[in-house]
Amino acid sequence: MKRSYRDTWKIFTRFVRGMILATVDVAMLAEFQEPRKRTEGAIFCLHGLGDLLLAGNAIERLAAHMHKQGLRSVLYVQPALVEFARQNFPVDHIEGIDRRRFERRRNLKYRATVIRNIRGRFAVAIQPTYNRTLMVEDCLIRATGAPMRIGSAGHAPFITSLERKIGDHFYTQIVNQEARRMHELERYAEFMTAVGMPISSKPWRLIAGFERKNPVTETAYMVVCPKASDAKRSWPLENFLQATRELALRHKLKVVMIGTEKDNYPLIWPQPDKNAPELIDLRGKIPTEDLPAVLVNAKLILVNDSGVYHLGVSLDCRVLAVGGSGIPSRYFPYPAEFTQRAPVIYKTVPCAGCDWKCIYNIPHNVSAPCIQDVSWQQVAEAGNQLLNQET
Image 1 (tube, rainbow, N blue to C red):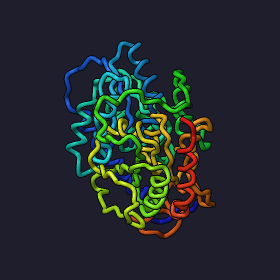
Image 2 (tube, helix red, strand yellow; image 1 turned 120 degrees about the horizontal axis):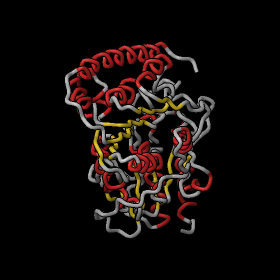
Image 3 (cartoon, one colour; image 1 turned 30 degrees about the vertical axis):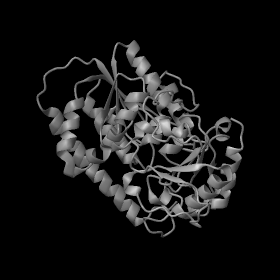
């Protein structure tokens, strides 16, 4: 797909910013520090909830390997996911790093604090994510100064070939991965096989996380999360409401709406009459660590291709998602034996593989055409089939 002038400019400015930050890091790392005994191993998984869940098998295996080496395992995640990770991952310690703050020049104080915290601590540092960037993953790996520093080769658009050439020097081992399209579970399995620690490419199962009370007391309800991380990846809200109304009325379900507080726009049912389903609006009221208790008891979960979708799969719930074609085959479909309980409705389009750089001139707050073209009737019918499945 042809690269636009705007894309080229963004890549150039990102590279310049990365070089500036990498240079600033040198001064921070050159500061005098007392020698520290390296008794820990670091694992960096700094993207969203879905990425963290998809890395679950790899994280478990890496932590177990570190324990065998006599090292304390430390998992780094986004700050909002610290408590969730603490409850559900078998690692010794969880710490948060805000990747957005870390990569901004206006937040050099925060960046310095993070670098001072991680330097000199680790005997081994690993970042298994394919979404590698020079400004974040590479610079963090270098900052650890660990004798063993292992990472994925990464891929465009997250890292360019020039950025990769620079960042590769920060590692003692780079895992070169196949360029062909594959599901993220297979990608992590590929990485772990390359470092001599094979793992399953099946979904990581979340078996903890239910200690907290479920705020939903109803016995028959469906959960709906109508937001994705980006507006162009989100199915239109009116479609969610149409499909939800149809399913809830047909199967006599109450509707629990979840999401972030910033998504707290008014919700109005299509045909708002006395027959409209009962709506329990919990947007902005449930922290991530409490989501498993809400989702696991739902008759159906209806979402976009998002972190909540992957959480539903990890819980082995009936979960239905609407997806787009920006990154085909990477996050869905799951392997065939899992798609029966976790299908994704999407439209195959000629422009698939755009990395969410939509070729159509659409406003930033509008769904991409490949998502808009999925009808609410399609989703309602798929949801009906799921709800009619035997448990």
